[in-house]
Image 1 (cartoon, rainbow, N blue to C red):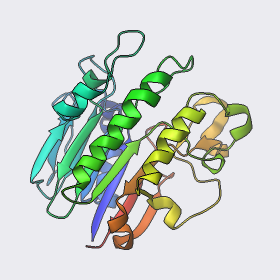
Image 2 (cartoon, helix red, strand yellow):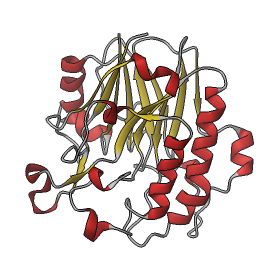
Image 3 (tube, rainbow, N blue to C red):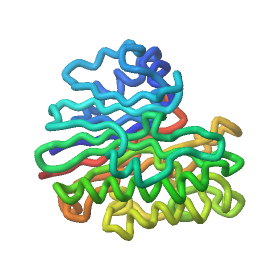
Image 4 (cartoon, helix red, strand yellow):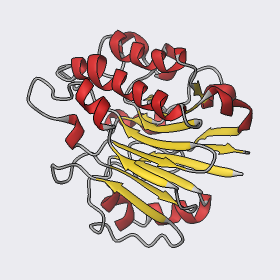
Length: 266
């Protein structure tokens, strides 16, 4: 069995200073832990997580974005960001001149039987100033990246995709329609992943609403479970039967997101 966890920690230095990350790892013992929004470079956080290989992709801008993979099995290879061919094909700079390729948003690790990809998809922003970047550039580039990896072996990708796919994936779909995280364009980008054959693992086991991974800090939203499901683990169709469980862990505190996980039996 291989346990793969994903967590947007919203600042790895904060969750390690509190001891939250260390406690989580000791309790859940993930084989592969994918992190998003680390907001740090390797060495900046005092992390005592023995037995793991660490791989980081940090943003050029200090204290912003970033991803990491902590893994017990050593990968065959690890790459950051998109391939040069995909980077040339898609334009990743938004209207404000911010380059999403400089934000440390993607790591791909190759294992003997599959790839694991951690992704922190750009937020469309309250004013939707990054919606075009998402819809026309990032989302199609990410799909192309996963398809390229899939030519070699199956893919597991996970992370904060910054979108609620359906009305079941947020507590208040009506007033949020057309707002960041629930625009038609962002939802379409997610649907294209599904149409390409990737499987939303959580929906193999649980249907309906009430299952969320992110809660606003306002109005006691987490305690009231007024949230959004925007963190996912998706797998290639060929791995469907290997997925033995898929879970959301709202009891894990320390971030405005909670971890999500799957267990694979290969």
